[in-house]
Amino acid sequence: MEQENRRKGACLFARTAGGEEAVLFEAGNRIPFFWLTLLDQDDVDAFYRQISLPSADGTQPRKCCFELDKLRALLRAADRRNYVAQYYASCLPLFDDWLYFMQITDFSDRKIYLDTDEIRACYETPEHFADSLRKAIASFDDNRETWYESTVAAACGYEGRNRIERCFGDFSATCRDMNRKDIYSRFDKKIHLGKRRIFRKKTVRAIFMALFVALLAAAVFFFALK
Image 1: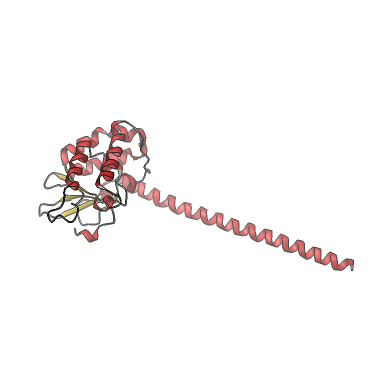
Image 2: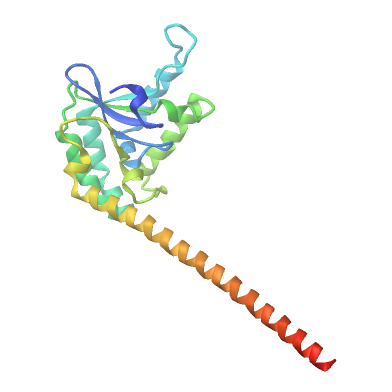
């Protein structure tokens, strides 16, 4: 898949047997917390050393992309299942589906790639970006809650826009159900917001009419006295 067809932000992708990228999940300007369960501090240290080195031509920073061993990364994520169960219980079925989907998806070179190039650009230096990742990962090890919304987008990201054989949205009934509830919830909020606005308009109109009637009655009474 070509770079320009991706969403803005990060993406999780695999390499096909032909060497091309198959983007499985995409994100905005924050890395979804399921992705973070794949990482440990050593991964961040190696990543920091990589992006701190000058590029081959010595002008452009190196591309910010994690290359994770698939088996080790998935085992690490599975070890953090209790963390998800404790702090994001509503996302646990989604996490289980996501782990299984990642397990059965074909990563031809047995590596999971996390492209964080555009998110890195939001930080002043590579040090700041690496430190933010270390703090996020430390929450798993220290069993500290980190604020994330219990939505598909915040948990595992958006589904990649490509033509891979198996898509997560087709695979996971939980994903479809959570997306549907999120859409209905936002739609319901718009309806209630609209009702509140209509109520306010009716209230203002009623007050205006009451004042108008009061002024009219006062005028009639004044002229009647004359």
